Amino acid sequence: MPVLKLSEDWTPEGQLGLMLGLCEAQMDSALQESDQSIDALVAAFTSLVDTARAVSSLSEKLSSDVKAQLDPSFHEQIAAFQSQMASAVVAFQFYDKLSQRLGHVRYSLSTLAQFACSRTQMQQPEQWTRLHSTLRRLYRTQEEREVFQIVMEGDGSGFMHASPAPASTGNAKAGEVELF
Amino acid sequence: MSGAHQQTILAVDDSASMRQMVRFTLEGAGYKVVQASDGMEALEVARGASVDLVLTDVNMPRMDGISLVRELRSLDTYKFVPMLVLTTESGQETKMRGKQAGATGWIVKPFNPEQLLATISRVL
Image (cartoon, helix red, strand yellow):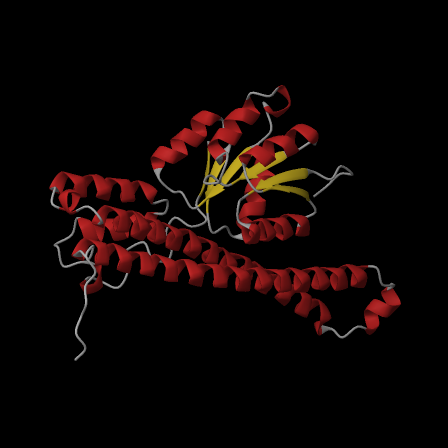
């Protein structure tokens, strides 16, 4: 087994900060990569929708004689495409929500990495309470708040050992409209 | 949509993919869509164009959606223009801030295209 040489400024807090920084960097890299892919996917989807709309619009301009010669399933297929498009619009928005939530996780890791660098701070319960409040204020979605509640205010066993998802998974609030 | 006048909607969101989703949902229903990626840019666009409805996200860099609504409401031309907030935020506190700023309504993302169009028709 190789002999472990520790530098003079080696501390467990420093190592913890470094490892948390590594997690943040990995998440940042993965998010950037997926952002590029989703942008390409959205561009391709937009182009498909524009083409389908152009075909539909052209078909409306055809003379009644030509329309009569069209395959009867033509309009059904256009209608089916429009319905699938609506489902895709909803699905694409989940990526946006996912990247927002992962962005909050990234910020939490970065904040924790800075926090962990101070041994004095880590030994003060009130500093941990302040950190919890800071991170909680980040949350924008119902799901994030529920996960926080399960983990931080639950029985102490943590989310990994709890039910696989909070009660509102399935986006109970999604699409909710309130007019003032 | 009836009538010769094509109504213009200002869609504000810092996510390019969200703006795309909103754009082709609204354009498919016959609206003209102008876009901005944050509140500051939206203010500039709104000052330079005639907008019939504003659809804005909340959390954006430079100027958030609630501040945007407040700023627009202070302009004579936007006193009575419907302003809908489209956001992942579902907390009552933020919603109340939006209402106090002058928002017309609140829609929680992800939106369903048909539902969004029905809501827009109701307020326009």
